[in-house]
Length: 167
Image (tube, rainbow, N blue to C red; front, side, top):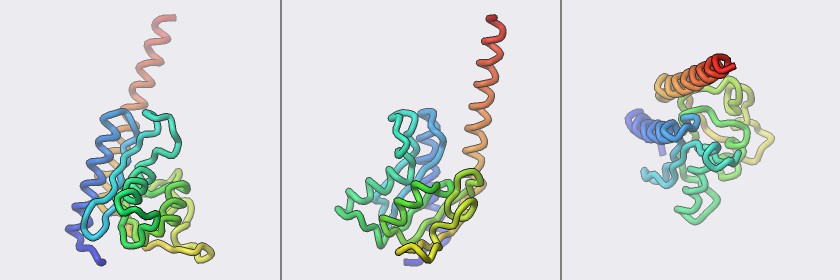
């Protein structure tokens, strides 16, 4: 099913809302949603810190919820929207779930496994390839991340300054 730019923006806005939920609880602001037949069947945002579980990435949580919603590990008629280019782990889950389409916002030059560091989704050696569209609302997704990490660095700097003052 081909989506219009309005639909893509709408769904990416929902993924950005998930990312903001992550930010509110001190997590890296990444959000994801899975869409099936024009219905959101899975949502997720980063929760690694809260649960101290490396697998609690936005994509992994959205995929898990989507599988439960349709009672199948095969998400063959779904689209995944995510605010940041998926990492190797999440790309593996996307491939294994047979998700045919991934639409993401910002590139991830440090861990991206779709276009930045690796190109897993178009590797012909794998039994499944994924159609990718990148750059949907990339500025908003990227700005969320930049602001988050700027705040983290400022807090660390203040904490360091406070520790030196107490010495």
